[in-house]
Image 1: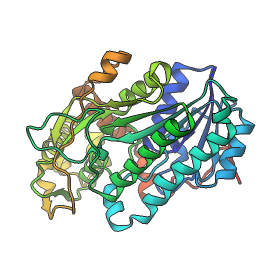
Image 2: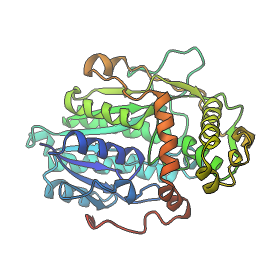
Image 3: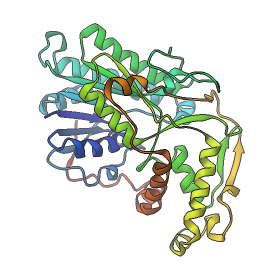
Image 4: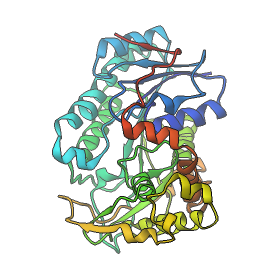
Length: 368
């Protein structure tokens, strides 16, 4: 049985990981730490909080608070998701990314080192797992080989630079102090509870509301898409079988151009509306409600600064060492994701109108 602290788990990927872990390891105790900034949503945790899974509302930059939580709950495993993650926001406001991603990670590392008395090996079996991104590797051309764990770091945005910095801090705490740490670098995630500023949910919700679909540049930028449940599976394998001190890349081996993703979602929405009067009534502004193609909403806008062309992940290491194999095909995953948003309009309507964090669950407390 593990006593696990999961940071940032009121957000998209962290919440899905907690849901996955509760199903796979119901004997474990989980303490979720989240500051509930704009992307933190307590409703992402509906149905999972209870005696063995509690939420502490706190900022990871509060080192003394992290020390107390680690001690009070006898934490032996940290899974660190908490981060500012939207590239556009990092371009207009980089300070928040340095504070959360670099200083926040360092605060958590200091707390873990102190509580686990790392140099003295007081807590022999501990693990600090750091969740990072493929964006730290920079950009690829069309014919470049995919990123491996040995690819040199070359971050191109304030976001990716802040994540690269946090990766190096975790590595340094392992090599300098002996912290039992692992890191995973993932490709673009998609799935339920995805905050609407990101590409796939943004496209879905804009289409349903009849809003334009702004596409950067010519839309030919390429991303590898990973279903969030497969990401959780990969992290679980790293926690169970991953070698301490190692980095593992977790990807979906599923490259799509941005414009092709947008066209696919538009086509799927068109199909859903053909034989559904209820969808037409609920979303009258959607072009499909008027039997028009949703692709009519696509507009091309000026490319963003420093926009990386292509990301692709080589998953050979995690496959060969840990037996990782994605279980969700993109064909089924994207349809499941669309259907989730069509069915869970109460969730995303609350996100869009800003009321999604007004209620703190009874299983939560505010750490000081």
